[in-house]
Structure formats: C-alpha cells, structure tokens
Length: 280
Image (cartoon, rainbow, N blue to C red; front, side, top):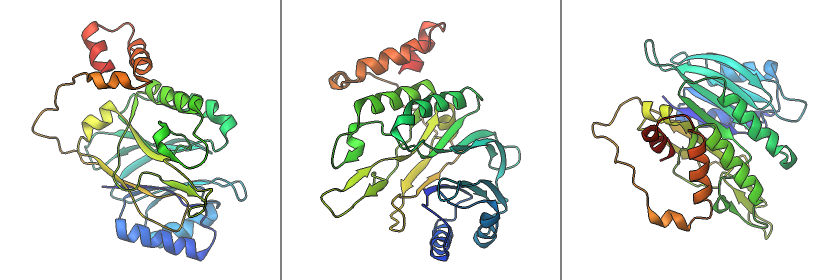
C-alpha cells in the first residue's frame, strides 16, 4: 500500500489532469490526497473515473481558492469521519481483519495571521481519537530554520508554535528521502524562496504498527509543491529497537531544554518510568 499527498495547485484544465494521471500511473498509490484542487465534487467525479479509483470524498473549493479531494482504491477499507476546508479525517485498514488506524489529510492555514488558530485546530483533532495516527499534507509551517532557503528567516515564534503543537498532539516528524524543500517561489531569481511545507507526521503507536514505513518526495516540475509518497508496511523487525540514550551534544541546541521540559510536563500524573519513556 502507498499514500500520495500533493498540493496540485488546480485541476481545472486538461493538462493538470493528464499530469496527475501520469503521476498516479507511475506511483500506483492506493490513497491520494489532493490540496488546492480549485474544483468541486461535480468536476472531481470524472477525474476519479479517469484515475481508476473507487472512492472519492471532496471538500469543494471556494471559487479559485482551496479545495480538497481524497481518492482511494477498492483494496483499502477507508471511512471518512470528518472534514473541513483544511482537513479530511478518516479511519483506514489495509485489509479485512487488520488493525484500524487514523489518517488525516491536512492543509494548513496559508495566512500567517491564522497560525495560532491552525495549531489549536491540530490539538483539537488530536483529542478526537486515540487510534494510531498519521497526518500528511501541506502544513504551511516549519519545524526548524534549516527548512527554509532564501530571503528573510522564518519567524522564530512560528517555528516554536508549530513545534509545540506537534508535541502536544503526540506526533513526530517522519523523515522522507528526496529533495527536502517541497515548495518554491521565484526559482532561478535573486528572490528565490524554498521551504519544507509538506511533511508526514505520525504518532508513536502508528510508527510501532508500521515500523518499516518509508516516505519520499517526488521530483515533479508541474506545481510549486512536490508530491510526497508514503509506503507503510505492517511487517515488524525481528530485532528490537536500540535503547534510548541521551546525547550531550543535544544540549547545544537552543530548543533542547524547552522541548524536554515541555515533554515532561505532558506526562504529569504517570509513574516515573513511564514519564521517562514518554519524554525520551
């Protein structure tokens, strides 16, 4: 099974649809999340047929703005549980009898003045279920200053706020291979900006379930966003994970003490060994 996430920047013309069809044909994902489709359900239905998917759920665009679409094959048991202009939430199982987990396709609030609302929205989503959780999409946020190239640095308060939201939600960043700067503007000019806006987040329980999961960005010149593809697998490693050890070099990181303190505070009320394990 694989999941594809892409901010496609519009499916209103035949060229965009052909490009999407080529992408689906080459990568063969069973679940596809599309953001900024700029179309409604009526226009997405023939696209679903052309791509060969059985399931479709659409959050209609507001004229030439926004729009989400989730497509899935008949090989996947998927049930949509909730949605908004910024997310589609669903329960997924890979086959009959396999464990159910939660997948949220996420499109972050694009305007900076709405960042705090976006972080609080993530926390609200986290409180809705205790299932193993995977979140994938365009977050319009950065976790570190190194995730941006060009022009002015990203505001530190934005990085700090997004980090805290991710921690509060019990999520962690799942690394992906390939080019890391998934969005660009004015490439090839002195005003070029590149940022890692698209990513995969998951809970500890989801990563335990799919501990061989891999993700990668896909070189794709059509949109200003790169697609991400995720390949989870339920096969477990025979060897246990290495025991957690603190590395003193982390103390050189500016956010180290804040992250440790924040993680420790989130486990108040649990026994000490559990708190140490969660904090690590």
